[in-house]
Image 1 (cartoon, rainbow, N blue to C red):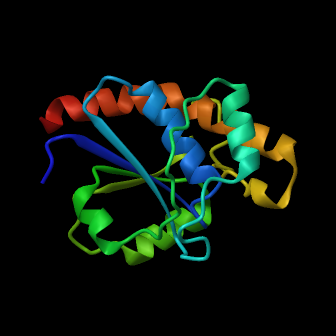
Image 2: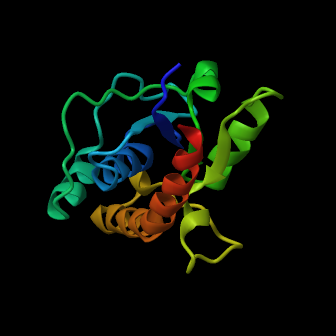
Image 3: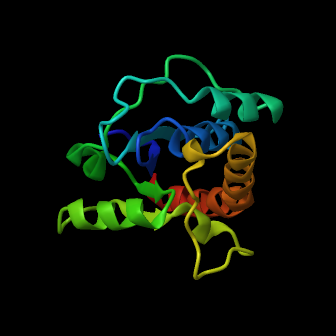
Length: 162
């Protein structure tokens, strides 16, 4: 088991929201002992790259994307190897809660819980896949609004993790 703090971001197909969150968080945690990954609750897009519209928005905001992303389905072992699992929408959170083993060390949270300005009654991020570029911009905005809270939380948690 790795001593690095491990975060997995989760959406439906692992081609839009969760890989966007993964690369945005990776840039925020650059040069730290935090390992990032992403996955989907389905295998509908298994092997697919990040949606080109997501890439366009990330590049516009100077987010380093990297190469080689291939969509994958969240696996039972992710509950064992992850410290923090960040669901991008409420249906992902519910799916993770239903599939989590009764004894898991992973903490499952909604990403937007870490945005102090978020409406606590609406913590999901809608799937931009059905929309246009403005929907991907909104996804980017919602992810980055939660970013400072996630970083602060992980820095505190990771200090006790080592």
